[in-house]
Image 1 (cartoon, rainbow, N blue to C red):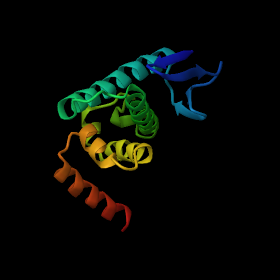
Image 2: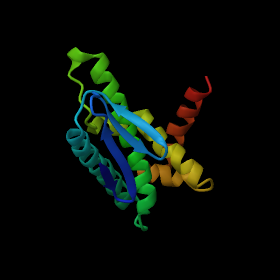
Image 3: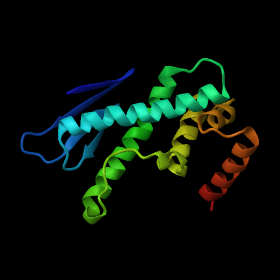
Image 4: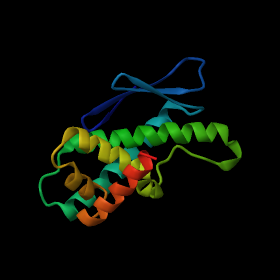
Length: 157
């Protein structure tokens, strides 16, 4: 089944006798363990919209300029697929914990989520990635600079 998330196209499938759903995107395959294609598709669409709307709200609040849909879609898909895969694995490994493949609001505050945004923007916009990143993750420039300095210390232990 093909799932279109704005300009992002995912192929969601399941082998005839398999327990896992496969999500193919950009030459990469992600496995969602013990789910159905229809549930996975539903979660992909709803999680994608939740992520995208969060960043639209941040960008319109902090930066009145035009939002670049292609960039927003790529960042949202990157975050979406990261958490779907992670939560799918946790759901399988920690069966008593009731993990689901849903994206949670608290995930926006996780450093991994912020890092995905920052690294994407740093690669695409080498000259103004800091200002763009601050807008995406809803920080003023001073707070972002402090945050990024702490992240660099973390990465360079």
